[in-house]
Image 1 (cartoon, rainbow, N blue to C red):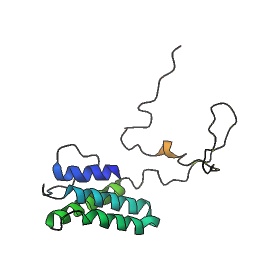
Image 2: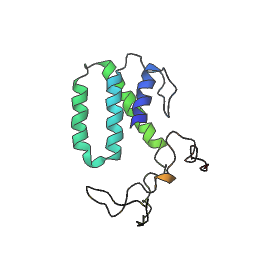
Image 3: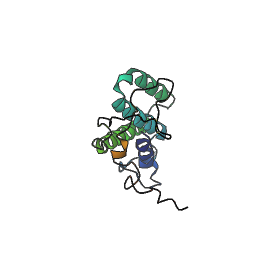
Image 4: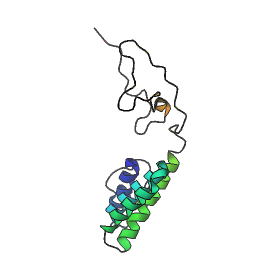
Length: 148
């Protein structure tokens, strides 16, 4: 979501390098606020479809704060376009894979289930295999061997 927001705003103000997506030939008067709201909304609805009703309401509330007109429409178009392109580029990154089963240990330092719900299985155990969002590889900043 934040990558889509960043690239949506940057497509309008064109002051930084894009993260993944740049929409070309956007009016500099396009509403950055509308672009942010649309990028966030489109991304969140795609990732959490069960919350669409609430997300739609919040989106409409956000848009109600922005004056109607061509700049608002242009901002919505940019935000929506960037979000859809970002989602498409990340669609096969491994984040939707089935989590790797985790076996709890009882040795010092072993992960233990945590409150408040003490899940039987930790979440995101497969994320070490997800294509990194900003790094070139998951090993890029691994610590070296400890020197005594």
